[in-house]
Image 1 (spheres, rainbow over the protein chains, first blue to last red):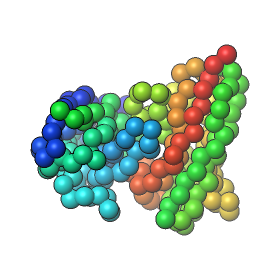
Image 2 (cartoon, rainbow over the protein chains, first blue to last red):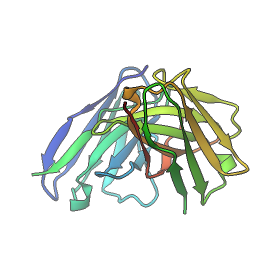
Image 3 (cartoon, each protein chain N blue to C red):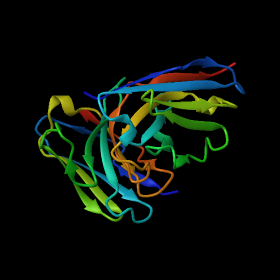
Image 4 (cartoon, rainbow over the protein chains, first blue to last red):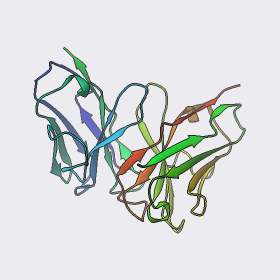
Length: 107
Length: 122
């Protein structure tokens, strides 16, 4: 199975900060890497698909980059509604696997 | 608007069975793969199973292979997960998710249901 390692596991940031979350795959997954946001007691929501494509309706402050094994999710200016947990997901290989999550908290 | 509504969760004893269902609306159901993803309380996400548009291709996580069966009924716009020989470690929120294409491989999940809780305990 492909292991997905996210870092950091959690971070504290202030409104307006630039936030970067990384995801590393244990082998190449080309660009089959996707990012989700999950708020407490809610279902995950797709933010970025295929490494860098912004899902319809998602604010442009979210962006993704990377390929092969190293990927990044960036929030250019953190907003109050962005405090949540973020997961990366690879669909290059079955079983599809997720990162362990990064919790973004208010500083 | 895409809607996915799960049902069938509840409390079940170890070794027993449970069947989850997901009713879909707001899109052409038979053109998309569907998936089940679970999340143990306070934990991360785990893909459980995926099924292609015509049921021709199916995949399972190793942790459920041989115990869980995914199926779909395109006439009823629904996907199901039959869960047998349940274990305590199967306790989780189970989400139904829509894939982005016909095949279950290479998917991202662009819509999710609100989830149904399965608790396996004596």
